[in-house]
Image 1 (cartoon, rainbow over the protein chains, first blue to last red):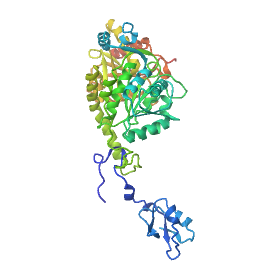
Image 2 (image 1 turned 135 degrees about the vertical axis):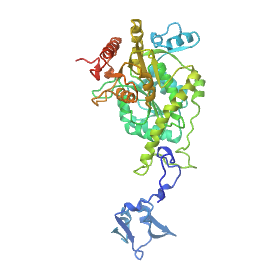
Image 3 (image 1 turned 90 degrees about the vertical axis):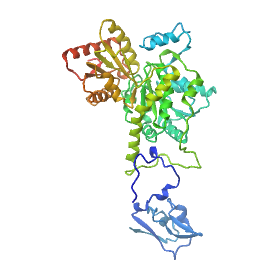
Image 4 (image 1 turned 45 degrees about the vertical axis):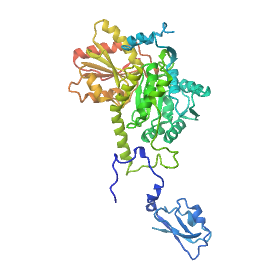
Amino acid sequence: MAKKKGWKEIPIGGLIDKGGTAKEYNTGSWRTFKPIVDQSKCINCLQCWIYCPDSSVIVKDGKMEGFDYEHCKGCGICASICPVKCIKMERE
Amino acid sequence: MCEHLPREMHKNGKRIVETEVKMATQKLVPLTGDQAVAEAMRQIEPDVVAAYPITPQTEIVMNFSQFVADGKVQTELIPVESEHSAMSACVGSAAAGARTMTATSANGLALMWEIVYIAASTRLPIVMPVVNRALSGPINIHCDHSDTMGARDSGWLQVFSESAQEAYENTIVAIRIAEHKKILLPCMVCQDGFITSHAVEGIELFPDDKVKKFIGEYTIEHSLLDMDNPVTYGPIDLQDFYFEHKRQQAEAMKGALTIIPEVLAEFNKTFNRNHDLLEEYKLSDADIAIVATSSTAGTVKATIDELRKQGMKVGLLKPRFFRPFPKERFVKSLSNIKAIAVLDRSDSFSAQGGPWFSEIKAALYESKKQPLITNYIFGLGGRDIFPENIKKVYSDLEAIKKAGKVKSLVNYLGVRD
């Protein structure tokens, strides 16, 4: 891991001087339960994508393709909202 | 109107002579301390003022609101529902890049506490006149310094004003100090509740254009509202960077000790004044001295004049800035004094005296000559301080000087036994 910057090198007051930096912050490590999707049962209703509070459901061409485990905190909302119950939460 | 000046204008040491010379040409207007600060705010014309009224600060915001209503300033005035909201609005406004002010007293400052720290640590140069009032409880609306002394570790700059004229001038110069690119810290401009805030003095107002020219335009490097260059103010800051940001804050406060005198020098040159981090009054040849700030300094000066006529070598050191704390200046001014009394208008309840005393005593640890020093807590809850009280302190100091030792380190002046 790169050496963190010292107090003379960083913006003052805790300012973050650019946008979109949350992407660089790995919140996946907070997870206790991991969502696993059974693609064979998925109907691509995308309710999980709508409800995910962290944009961690990956959707491509209108199809649910899995999870961004770098950022998914394992809240389980996707599993709870899934109408066909194709998402299960597994302990890490 | 110059022939009939309030007496107060004549008793404040060196300024007397200057004031008398200027009287022929300078126009003086009768204003209270609160009105004088409101006039300063009118001249500064901040982009945003968010404030909530509280005695004895109310007249500042009341008078300023009138200026807004009368169209004399273009300021966006936000009448909020509490001081917590006032300071919160100020933080948002300052982060957006608006020159921002508010004002408060005592319990109002206490209610904004959480955001007071956030303003300083986010490095937003908000200027806040504080009319010093005893912090409850028991509830009391009169002067002491328990409110701003409680905030002494909040990271704000703090300047104390002896008179309404000083409160006016400090408010103007505080803008330049707070906004200085190497400081960027908020500043409290303190004056004594009722004693200064509600008493009328003859005030010399500087011309509007001269004030505007002196303070200049406020520019911010990163505006919260700059959509082309998005930034985040106030993100969570944990074990990995919080400490670094606090280290920056400490450095800014330390650096302010060098920069403030530079800004004051420019102010002095522009407005023909003599402001400094602290002020000595008949101190250079004094044997014994009092350290007192705000309105009490005026009472001490008048007492000194009287005692000097009786041949007593007495002097005063009036600190103006408490944050940053001008340690080296204290050492320089006080090292040759034989016995010193520090007057504190608040108690720290530390069992070792008030805040000025603790810090001045600590500063003098670095002096080769360590003068005898004692502390008087006085004036809590607006208890009057009279020349007789000051004479008692000087008489105690004479005894300490003769005995060569301090018998009682912390004393309470003007309280009934």
